[in-house]
Length: 128
Image (cartoon, rainbow, N blue to C red; front, top):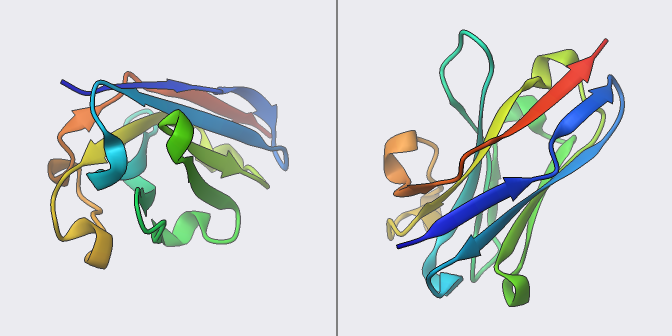
């Protein structure tokens, strides 16, 4: 069983920054592909950014390009999402997810169904 716990969400003004953390436990994560998704009120959950655990290859949505950066600390089994220049439309619950699908590291995994494990989510609210 894999457990993912997000933290770091909160309220921030537009233009500000937040760093989300996702702590993973229960397995060795060198083979896992880690992603961040978000779900705004009334909308479907959408892909934000992802990283292969071993190679560090990253994949991102166009909406966050140049503003959000995903990284990982293998020693701490933790993935981070640094969010800069936040906008009100970034307001959402942010979820961390893990996948063992073998194609993710080469091609990316952008769909919810490609991820087997999910955290409980952390709320990010950006005020205008």
